[in-house]
Image 1 (cartoon, rainbow, N blue to C red):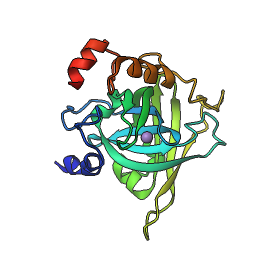
Image 2 (image 1 turned 135 degrees about the vertical axis):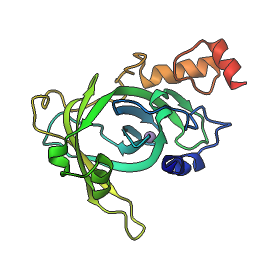
Image 3 (image 1 turned 180 degrees about the vertical axis):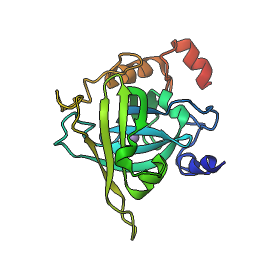
Image 4 (image 1 turned 120 degrees about the vertical axis):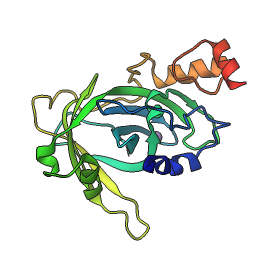
Length: 221
Ligand code: MN
């Protein structure tokens, strides 16, 4: 399957003996495509915005996080495709490992492409390849139309750069600035600090569902 190869970069960056992030490849296809937004307290605190496309999570690191204000253009730097299972990952990536730091699932839900704005006859993944795609999010926190637009290509060894912008629609407006340190997991209600503290207490190296310390110890070995 094409997507297995799509995860080579993801797998190549990680040692699965040392991180509890998923290796991926086990998830079955879903009827409705999903999105997930994680907050990641790595070297630089950022949001990770991920859209399910062709069986993987297409991913962008968004330093300031999404905005509900159509005037705000939020920088979104593409990162490697992540496995579908990553949408469940909440926990701590151990020091010394790729992406070391705490992750919470800030928002999740489903989305649908907005084809009128994506170009007739092309699929959503083609639209992304061309550098512009619009979509409607039905999340717990994020709602309505958003667009991702590439404004700098990745040629000559440079890094691609995109913008994530809210569309002007009935879901625009409201508070646009997010405080990532105070934000809570949509799954468990925990802040980054709470997740980090709980894992430090349990001595484990990560648990996405907040299981007991004993569960963790067993799983970590
Ligand atoms: Mn990240």
